[in-house]
Length: 79
Image 1 (cartoon, rainbow, N blue to C red):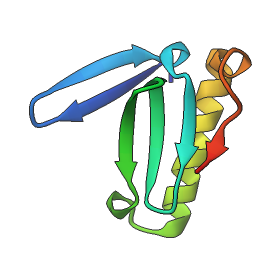
Image 2: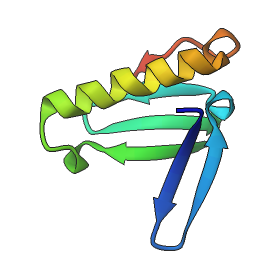
Image 3: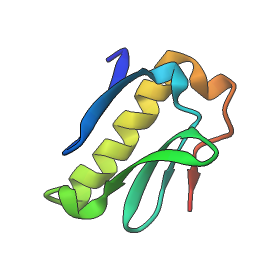
Image 4: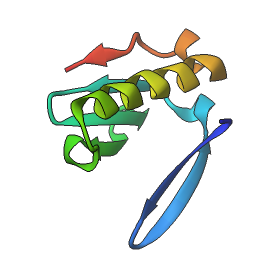
């Protein structure tokens, strides 16, 4: 994937993976940061299992690394 798409009931946005500054994970959400104050939030409850939640986190980080944004962004963090 070369792009990330965010959809909601009011619209959608498609961005390059290079626009992703960092990815952070908590016990309840995965955050895909587009800036220090803007993030796409993925609540854990949307995933069918803990394994699917962890797999999503891993996959997002792989996409970010492939886009080269990991080289310029802070290290991925777990909050």
